[in-house]
Image (tube, rainbow, N blue to C red):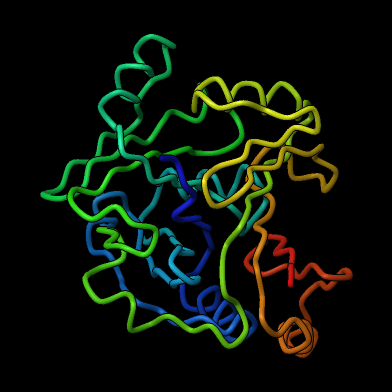
Length: 250
C-alpha cells in the first residue's frame, strides 16, 4: 500500500495562507501540531476528504522552511507525504539506495521517514506508517484525534495528484520511481493507490520543486469565483493559492 495522504505547503506567514485556502477551496482547519515547533515552525492541517493539506510557516530564524522559501522565491509546495504499510522495509531500502533519512519520526502510533531532498530531488519526500487501522479514511497522527469533524465537502472533495517540476522531469520521475519502488509511465507519471505523481518541465522561473496539486471538486465555479474575488491567478481550471497551482477536476 502506498497512497498520497498529505501535502505540505510553506508560507511566509501562516494565517494569510490558511485563510486563502479556507476562503477559496472551502476547507477548514482540524489541527495545529505543536511538534513542528521543534523545527522553528508553526502549522495548520486542513482535511481534503480523507487526505490533508498542511501549511507551515517559520517562527524562528534560519529554519529549513525559511531557506526553502528563499530558494524558491516565496510561498509554495514543500513536501509530499505518503502513507505506507511497510516503513521498516522502506527504511532498509533507503540504506541500499544510499538515500539519506533527513529526519526519522517515531511517535507512539506513527513511524515515518523524511528523505533528504538532495538525494530525492524535487522536494522533501516522506513515507509514514500508522499502527492499527490503516484504512484510507483512518487515523492520521499529524492531523490530531478528531480531524473528521473538520471535513468540508461542499467545494473540494479529494486530493488526487501532485505535480513536481524540474528541468529534467524524466530523470526526476525515474529517481522517485526507483526510491518508491514503483513504475513510471512514458509520460512521467507514478500511479499511487489513490493519486498520481506527475513530473513536468519547470517553466515558471521558480526552479525544481512541488509546483501543483490536483483536486477533485464539487463546485469549481465557486472556487474560481472566490479566487478571482481575492485577486488570485486563475488560468482555466487552475487557481494559484499559497504559491501553488491547484488544478480542479470534476
